[in-house]
Image 1 (cartoon, rainbow, N blue to C red):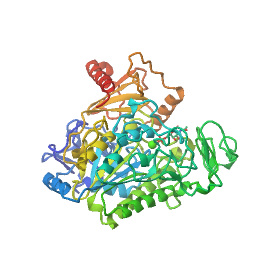
Image 2: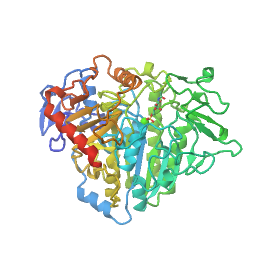
Image 3: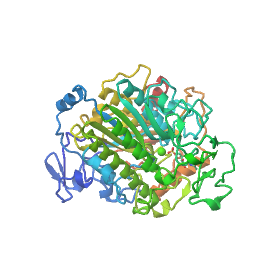
Image 4: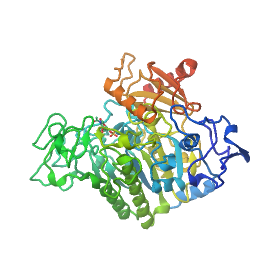
Length: 592
Ligand code: NG6
Ligand code: CA
């Protein structure tokens, strides 16, 4: 049985039933639900839930787990929270763990049944698990740009998946989470994947690489430029490639082959991981990448040790800065392709190598938490765990992940995944943890990752420059669990735009990302390749009955139909019109 207080839980999905993970239950295993002191059985709950969700094939239990509606009464008084935060010298440390391509259903605490994520589940168990938190976009670059700057990426031209040699999308001087916290006296560190561009248009990989994270508010940055499947496959510390031998300079091209190194296209017999799409450039360590590079042999990373290398750096940063307030923006490469886990994780999970990398990611989170504890700062650190975009299983390499996926559902009951405008693309796992300050529980408040900037600024009482973070709202109370009311609406992008409220989601295929507010703008249709990608992911996660859109406008009722199976635009023309206008208005006014 689960105890639910209706005064604590809001009902975006129309019901307050919960049957979440073990730790959220009250220990009575009768399958009933208690709402406001009354025991109901499932059939009698407010709307009821079908035994099997449409298209998903998941059981009611999985469905409920996926929704993750659970709550416990607030035990920490808000006054206590305010006192702790205002106490002199007690600014909280902030650790943002931004994972890569982890889906809403990829963690046990979000209902994943064939994955093993004890450390992340532990964060959720003693922290706040948000069930309606969104990234700005269904791909990495725009999502990360938006989170770091508090600025919707779709407002700007060219904020789309970047090659590894692309120029910095964020201008030096532009407000970022790091610049705001630095102004508040924080030591600021980046460890992990960057992928928001570097330099001013032409990078000399053998000299100082800037502007980059250090020009955008980070005191210390240990990172790679783009993704693990893109060249250059080297680490950068602040402005310099790590371990580079000047006698073996690096050159990079995304246009033509350079150097004599083998490529996936010409020398497939040298591959230890076959490619399935793209990824036919330079082979590094048996894996061919997107783009070409030559030189830099002593600096090349080993894919199997990326997780450990980044985690060691993250832990070192914590240890070095434990005596001052710090921001650690830790962006592991897992679970992005290529899936190349360390030996200790390879073959250990129940759903293939992609799931092995989930276990590896979980281990990284565990190490960070352990280091916070051992450094004596665990009780004064707000940890936020989330992901940059929805899940994908085959993202260009043939690594058997699709075949071994079994019944694991990377996006839970949500439709779509990475690249998709449906909920699977942008609804993210999102956990906040701050022992003694955040009451364990679950929140259904609607928030966007774009809100982190103002929320964190507010938490540390640091003003945001007037021209900064135009789309970020202060949702600090939601992050701390002292409010359950988040945003009224937010916008998301995946080649097209969607606007959603707590109940409704309008996908407007005539709205494409970019700075083109002109009414003369004529969007190009998606390419057949883009369409094919979207459908392949949707089909894998929800085989069968998907109704593919032909209409330019789709409206979904997320309370009645969380899996977005029925386009109800024709039934609610007034809601379509209201949301269309709101989206156009948000676009023209240039801020939220
Ligand atoms: C795509 C790549 C994919 C991945 C993605 C970026 C191909 C066929 N696909 O273009 O493998 O790298 O870009 O992922 O090349 S993201 O998470 O960084 O957005
Ligand atoms: Ca990603």
